[in-house]
Length: 371
Image (cartoon, rainbow, N blue to C red; front, side):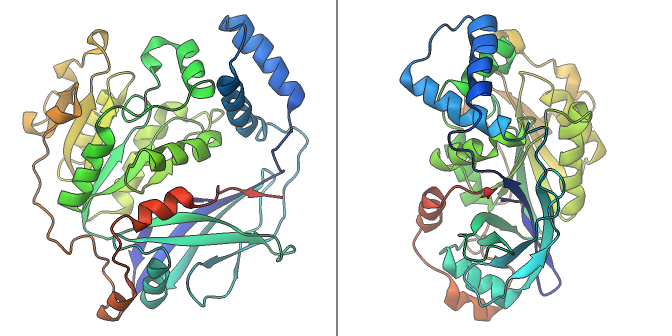
């Protein structure tokens, strides 16, 4: 299950999420793993042998990709149901799976239900957990996802992942990307988690990660962001096989601005590919909504041409090498800014342990419906 940001709607909240049904992945795809290792890694990349850690990562991550490439698998028509964890809400049936095992759902819950649910995850910053199960297998353990609650007003940071917060080295070519993605533990760009946590604290910012990384890697990317201490956020990824990959990022970011018309946005990316051009276009289309574009320069050879931002106020864009260089001047959020816009009765439900949410997120079971 993957959750998107929940949105205020009437006297409650709209919770969008996607459930995806797979066969169990452990021990499967042995032939594909061996063939891919021989042709791609040993043949193309000239990596003749893997150490134990690289072999383990390769098998884990490649299996996530291969499970979506089952030519004769048929997952259509499986009935699913969902509920909000920490409340007395009943299981509600959601749309059945399509042929790829995917089911999109959007459920509405009242303020009172949301208040109780936030107490379940001890969240003062706003997050709830939705769990999903198969209707015909009610005794099977459900799977779940955390959804951040995003108020109608405030600041949202939309961030790229590769080479913005995670070292992928896309600018060094496909071979390096494949190696860093499948054979190495993900590494954070130094200082970026601290910067984002500072913005969450000072400005009450919410976060959305928008990346062209494939959705098959959602689970390891989610785990990476949690382990490195990035604020809880929705993660939007792009299929490798969609004909719209070239326009995915601009369209998804634009849709987020349209979904939250009263919020302001900060766009953070890097100079490795096309983030400067994409973000500049969005800033020109939404000049009152985009308060700043911030670009990480990944190398001396990948400098940003200032002409990309021609016509945009110089105070509204910045290129940096080290996160400590970044400046963001916004009205500081009042102490209660991170509280949810829900009635006073909800306050009795909120926990008070500062690190509770991050601890629970790290300890949560892997999300992803299997059967």
